[in-house]
Image (cartoon, rainbow, N blue to C red):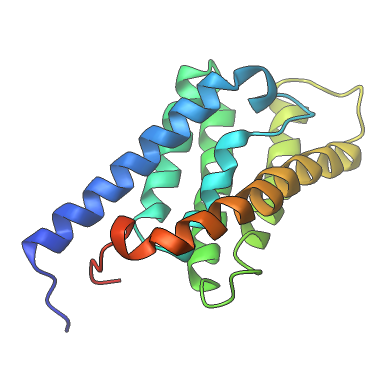
Length: 168
């Protein structure tokens, strides 16, 4: 079994905490477009980060939980939206060897889970659940693929500085 030194553990925890904090800030700053049936959650650009570090997985999960709580989401939204983010982040981490596949799991997880929370949790029934899936997926494509790929391009240039080898 590979032994990870204390420096690497601290770095991993710090990276996760910074990712969580960034997720919260981006969600709250862009709150008007972060919630609802038609949303482009800018914080979802961070779902590209499992490409660089496994610390992004818990960071995105915790960030989503905190952002939803601070954003005034109902308990079902806090739970299921965060689970969707966790599923997307874990799958993205496993697909990290193909940069172009990394955004797909967050898009799919959110498109399949969030509309049910909107329908049953918030009672948004004037829009078909299938249309909500399309709306959420479209917003995720903007955040994860378009904006996320711009972020990935920039971070790739600086990955050795930002994501120092931490045992991943």
